[in-house]
Image (cartoon, rainbow, N blue to C red; front, side, top):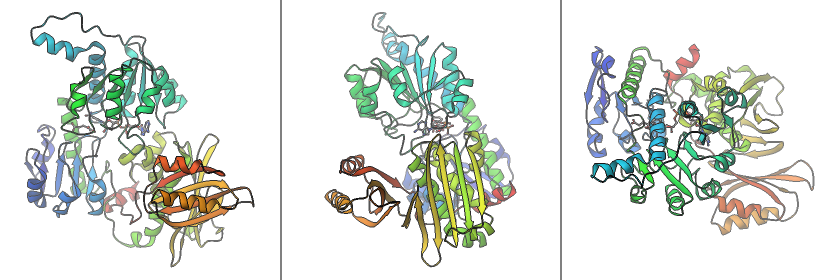
Length: 546
Ligand SMILES: NC(=O)C1=CN([C@@H]2O[C@H](COP(=O)(O)OP(=O)(O)OC[C@H]3O[C@@H](n4cnc5c(N)ncnc54)[C@H](O)[C@@H]3O)[C@@H](O)[C@H]2O)C=CC1
Ligand SMILES: O=C(O)CCC(=O)C(=O)O
């Protein structure tokens, strides 16, 4: 018998298949504080949560029996996926099951904001008949900027069009073709700022989207613009939003999600032009049934037939494959992550060349790992080894893999190029016998760098004194350099410097670096994993059967 713990008020109807199954015992608890959950979690094989229960590393330390964590919803930001992965626990979610609920809530919030319905409701209920204070605006013929054209963004845009709105959409994976077909305009973030009367965000919260709408962005927006956030708190910088509303530049905002939940910043709550709901986007009878049904079916599938479809992580793998491919898999994930950061935009094309010994190996898994590294930059935790190719196709990105027996001077060598229009980025890498992984090519420069968590990529004129200037500037900012590599293609031309650092570099340091005479560009690159690559056994079985 498998024991399943359900917290956070999940729909009983949706859990029916688990309740009825002879191999599962389902126990319910309300949302428990960490200390109480820690005491009982060790008894369960699976845990089902919504967003209130925080599945932290500390909790997982006590979860010795746990094999599956199911998020009855989309965002898994309340789950420490890396900690779960390290413990070999599969994390699954229910993507798409609450799309319509979140879409309709976004529309409800936009209309309520435009017509000041919550403010009017409050006064009318208090017995005050005030018909003068609540003059609203129409959506008809207004421009809506949609940032994030995934499942929810697309459905929101569709419905907003039926109100007669003109849609400007931004998503790194949105093609002209798809935009045209859906009757919207593919736009830059700046164009959305300049033209939109309403702006709604529908991205996950990632390093790129955190603070996407900040003071700088708000200053570029049209006066009187209104914002809606039913995605994740923090995509719109809350302090900056309050400042822009107080100055009269932004007319108002409708927020379902907050940087701090469940207790949002009082400045937001007290502002009369900000309307709020307590993270209710997915709170419909239908969506709650559907998310619970999906995760229940998936839990049964995992325990009964060892296959998974919506895993968002890569739990423990064992055996020969791991032994042999382990260094390549980790390196593949790393070069995927680096190359997309170098490209600075979503790719339309991916090229992978395997040379030397790698030609003899089955590299399909390695290819999936690289693609996951690339896509996860924009698609976050929703990408895994199982869905990597599927998502690539869905995003309209082409890929080509070639096996080239010629060894390029290394016993094994892999080269990954991503491109979009005329822009491209390349990383070449190898595993040196006895020395480990090395990045040996970045764009057209030959280098020799051990992948580290924090890297600095600098392009500069090949002239005396550059290394010293960079070193002393980083020293001024208390940033310790681990290693430094320089390379050039011709004497006196443009050269490259790649440094590994002990900590992150912020925008101020990048700005200071680029003001050094002769330094052409500086980019901070980050790797999420410099440890071990750990795909799940179940995940691999599924991969093998595709
Ligand atoms: N308020 C609520 O209760 C709910 C909130 N959500 C949240 O809504 C968000 C969107 O969900 P879905 O549409 O289902 O996800 P999705 O994965 O289908 O779409 C996300 C889209 O964001 C795009 N994106 C990523 N980085 C971007 C960037 N820097 N700029 C522009 N676009 C970017 C991706 O390319 C992708 O197309 C998630 O954060 C999810 O957790 C989802 C359901 C309910
Ligand atoms: O479970 C909930 O109500 C939160 C839904 C949500 O934010 C999500 O699915 O990402």
